[in-house]
Image (cartoon, helix red, strand yellow):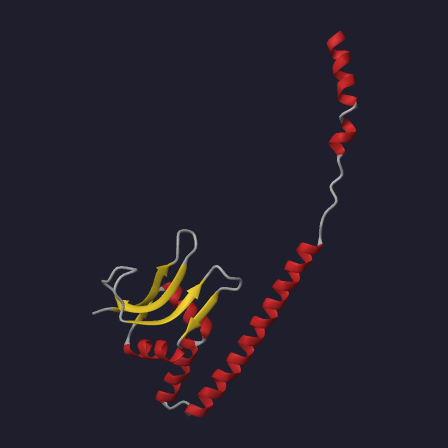
Length: 156
């Protein structure tokens, strides 16, 4: 049985909301699943992702294959990096405490980058709202000349 980690679509038309689930590869997209491990809402800015990191890591270690989108979500949340570090522990390259220290350092840097990007986004949104261009009515100034030109053309 091929087990996949994939998105299960919910929400109404043009308003998608996804569950991140572990399911048999033969099951339909929105059908039967083994376990729900998180949610993904692409409509918010930035997209909202809630994920149980431990469950995702357990399923990856059991051999579940993530789809492309779920792989990006797992990478964004650090699950794939944590799996990579734990493989290094298993191979004896470093101990568990060092792996967790590396992961915490990555996580802190990642969170700082996210908050910086969100702040920049909010500033640009405020700047767009504050900027209101002044449009001059050029057509109104040109309108009185046009009827005079038409009268001259009608007489000729």
